[in-house]
Amino acid sequence: MNSPARFPTDFVWGASTAAYQVEGATTEDGRGPSVWDTFCAVPGNVLDGDNGDQAADHYHRYNDDLDLIADLGLGSYRFSIAWPRIQPTGSGKANQKGLDFYRRLVDGLVERGIRPMATLFHWDLPQALQDRGGWENRDTAERFAEYAEICFDALEIRDWLTINEPKTVVDCGYREGQHAPGFKDDARAFVACHHLLLAHGLASRVLHERHAGRRIGPALNLHPTYPADDTPEALEAARHQDGLENRLYLDPIFKGSYPEDTLRWISERGPMADYILDGDLAVISEPIDILGVQYYTPIFVDAKGERVFLHERTQAEWLEVYPEGFHDILVRVQRDYPGVPMIITENGLPTEDAPGPDGRVRDERRITFLRDHLAAMHRAMEDGAQVEGYHVWSLLDNFEWAQGYSQRFGIVYVDYSTQKRTPKDSALWYRDVVKSGELR
Image 1 (tube, rainbow, N blue to C red):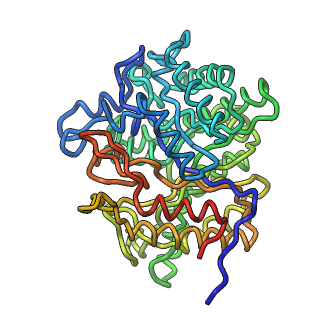
Image 2 (tube, rainbow, N blue to C red):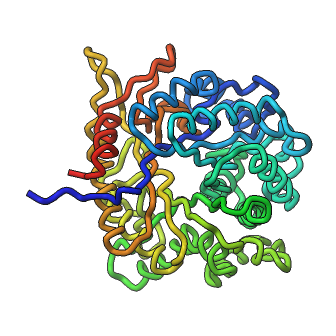
Image 3 (spheres, one colour):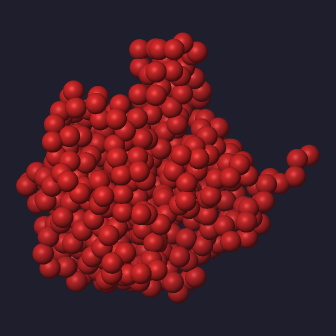
């Protein structure tokens, strides 16, 4: 029998959530509307007409949820701050009740010995800023830096993440129309891309100037790309796809330049290059202290550049199960963009969970997925990847964006009619891994 994979004693284990997906209370205590409130209100945008108005009611039940985190033995909780709770119109004076909620949350974590890790933007842009052009408007990046400064000054948090998955905002929100704000326009999408990255850099500068000793970085969903066959055309297509999936975000942050091949392709489709002003890339490449890595799926492409699925898929049809891709992307980042510790900020899958007659939620498929991916991560660490922590996605079943409440990513089952929480078998399994520091 193979010996168990042992993780370093100082390895940090945690779980993640996002504000709009779990908080609910979308009209309470001065919170303003976000683009997701607007998007959900349009019939047909979200499955079954669902929205985040109640979600997992974390806004009211956060103390119980913090007890859950503590009971699982987790050392870190990665959450996001809802910008429209802090600035209901995206600018101006802070809403004190919004800040107070996150202060209570942070205090509750610290009291339980759990490290808070906060994400500043997890897609819930204040609608008032969208009305003025959203991420296509350079001013939104400036407003983001001001919002970040309010949060930095108000909350005693060491580790910060700026923008969650800018690629998903670009691709799903602006290219495919599946997410808020619901556009299908490549030209607009890549202008938004540049301003999202600029916002990241501006906020990072603010933290470094005002709060020495704290750490900040982006949370990027990285998709290793592979040719689906051994033809030169497929190899070239995989290289192109890698540019759109990974290098478009990693290169400007780490190297201060956009990848030439990808920028050339983008410039044939829109005016992004015209929006890159002198000094922008110096801001975007403000040195980061941590890199949040989110891994779900690889991308295999054929000679025509079309995606091909070669492995098992999940309830989320885009999610192809390939743990080796987790190993590959971590090793690749360490090789090509060295010097910054990585923290896994999301990794998980949806399964069709339901309590059995005894109330137990047997999600064996999730346990297998997590075991295989943690093993791949451990191999990457053995191969030199500097990974200092792991956060499962997600702590709770929640509002899964355009899929509404139809997909459950949580290790804790949420009965949305009663808001009762039930740790699934995967949560109990994860608790044992965390306690032992070993993967068997």
